[in-house]
Length: 156
Image (cartoon, rainbow, N blue to C red):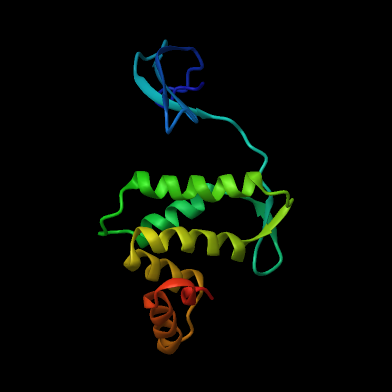
């Protein structure tokens, strides 16, 4: 592991702990070159399907894109970073457990919205407004009224 401070490759592990329910190993390391300490995280690499974008391009799944979008939607909302991580983990787990080699960005977005609806309604509307690319206020209001209806009537 290359030191983020001095780029030396020699280091030693000071402490290892399981985190996120045992799915991630957190390691504290100390650089043999500069003596600085830093943290690394290990997780099992899983084979994820390619994401088919709206314009037909295909690219690897990137959990950070989803996480960054969720963080933007949840700014100044009572949603913890851990809750957002759990949501992204659930979406990623669904993709890994699925049998598809390709999945549309639309399907991923809907999974994210489904989970976000339960976390925070304001963050949900913020994310939906960017994800669904509302063209005018009427589309926004229609989505808002769908969200407010109880039960299965909320589905698109």
